Length: 154
Length: 247
Image (tube, rainbow over all chains, first blue to last red; front, top):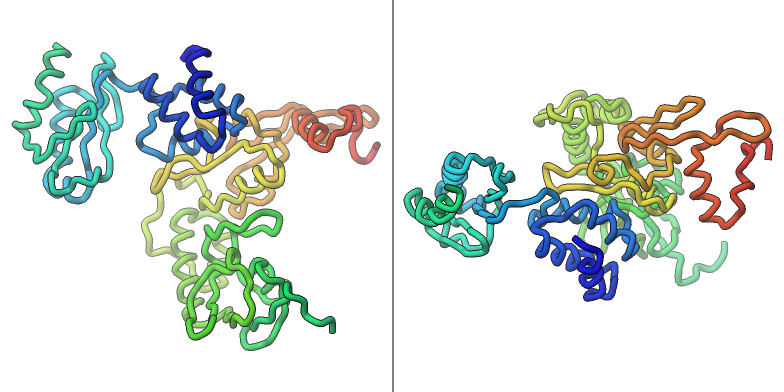
């Protein structure tokens, strides 16, 4: 992230150390992940030790320290989704796109993530593709949801 | 005896009356009066954290009697504390078994467990991290933050994946190599190596060149540490040109 952009984000939060979480979210919104070099500059400029930033960034699964793909597919693995076959969905996506859970495809098109419950258990199993929630997913339905992505990948 | 001011409270340990300061750590008060309670994550120099759970005692307040960690229990007027009830001992044994599952090789932990007749653990041991005796007590982190002020390390991850490490598990740039974490670690899992030229803190991947005394030529502390301390207490760096013996 260029310096001016980062400063805009920092100034938006008054360079307040207690706004660290919001700052990290803003950076991730821009960059799709949290670049190490950016975090170093945040540490220097708002006076929060790097160890603390790293601690926060690794605590929340919403943050990623590795570059993520253009599209982000999140499969809910909460108890309800899990017993309704979420692991099979992860397997299916993994097979179709050659990607492991928590990783990104080689062409940086898709990141596959798993989370432990998004709080919509009645809709389980649940797949979230780029922020859009798809409930009661079956293998066929999943194929339909991922169709455009597959096309894009060619 | 002096009249009790509003800070002084009376409480009981195993049925005997004692006095202490309101709000102080119950564990500190218990130990000051000569009783023994085991602990791994407590150190009087830093804030209590209640991670190891070994300082468990029973506290009776009013009609309620409950198990609680004593290190982070603020002392109050009129509480009755029981140190070695069956309930305390039973739970402490379980805790020792759980800790042993995390660090089966840690000598300090093994000998403490043996005192309670715990030789083995029924819980699944963490094979993947068998060489890592860290019990996630966070004491190194608190010492680094609160005493040293270097903020070099912190907990990373969460749940099963929680670990104590330097940022990115890479060289801890903020580490001054003072070795305080190594000194306080209850399971000796951090590791330090020292030669004439270099001090290494193994777990934080930190190698720091040693400062040689201008008078006797003996290496006595990492240069980076000396700079940190000189800045902190506001003296000239030259004050530390010589080792404490030659100063």
